[in-house]
Image 1: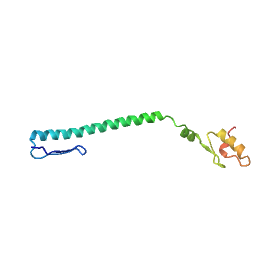
Image 2: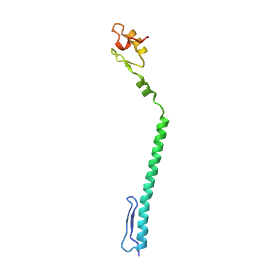
Image 3: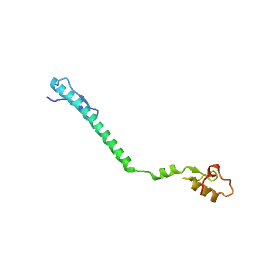
Length: 112
């Protein structure tokens, strides 16, 4: 007598034939539920591990100097569109590069 039972682990589906006894059916149902819980637990562990790894990568990446330098460029020359970090540099630039243009009003009180 052969036992004809098909077990598919990929989709967690177990097909049983009618000639299995009740305790065997209960065992199969218990196994089926256990397999789902194990995958759920693995998924949770995997998500936690990935979140920890992403946080460590972000922390290890550190400070981006290029972005910080770009954010520090506050003043823009109206003539050539060059950006400068402070008004003193802006006034020096304007006086050396655009001597014939009138001085912008925001640079009137700044000492170079």
